[in-house]
Amino acid sequence: MPIHEYQCKKCGHRFEELILSSAGADQVCCPECGAERTQRLMSAFSTSGTSKGTACSSPAGRGFS
Image 1 (tube, rainbow, N blue to C red):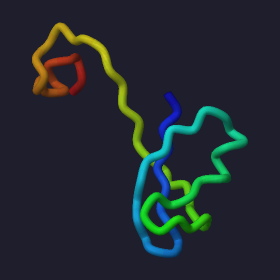
Image 2: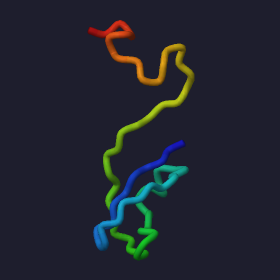
Image 3: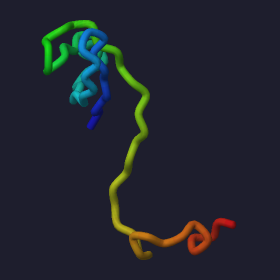
């Protein structure tokens, strides 16, 4: 799902928004103050899935040096 991070240019509030099309990405209003002046932020992505290792395994344990 395309979830994007935004920051309001008026009040500074940071929030996430689910955008279903690229056309809607420019029309995001701030949920705090209602301003239409928002900026899309660069954000890290995450993945989900299963792993056969432990949740806190070190990179060295996965073949990295």
